[in-house]
Image (cartoon, rainbow, N blue to C red):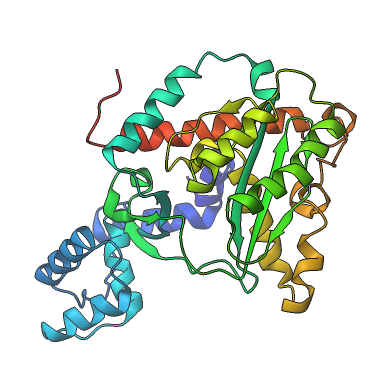
Length: 338
């Protein structure tokens, strides 16, 4: 039986069967022979050195590993260095930024999540979320990379970058939003004190509540910044009959406005505004920025038309934020969630 007859019966090329039969006649086997490759430049001892350094110091760079091997007597390139962790399931990833939490913060976050776990959808629609943020007009803060496996994203503290609320910035903004729409961005000039905070709330929050027709029973949310928890601020809120949603300390991930800030910063970074134009570009209002084009100030969410319903997007932001907190809590060794 010839090659062509076999190829017609089995539906393969005749050259394929010719190669298989020729390989059998020569080597008495049909499997592919192992290809000869260049020997690995890194010895098993060097591989152990790399893996140990990456495990103990995940923020180690490829250049650091090259220098370590060079001191050990082996000279290789950064590409060769990268191949070693890759063969063991490690890849260079952007380090996740998580709040710098103490055990007391973790317990408070868990209590908050449990207390509000069964709150109905209507309760979250009445919350007016607010926060201050720093905008880097010349790009988002530099990203640090770490060596880790895909499933270890939030599990190990040394592979994350703790974040704090303080630091230098180019522009500070105050904003707020709810399920019914967004408010205007307020540019904070200088150092904000209690009097300035009262002025911001009086000139921005109260008109927005009336414009959005929040109705009775709406709830105001702000974090535990000293200006927010000062006695004068509490008295001002009491006189204005504000109902405040208590938030635990160091809990930015419990506030869905953080997702909006992230989108805004990405848009600012991509557009790279000039310093003299920065106020004009950002001051128009959160709803007027591309990052939240679905949410117009004073506009009902049901009136918008887009592939993603704004009401669903709002609820998704809340759920994703609380889910992220649960990830942090579960990965924390100090507590056990029952």
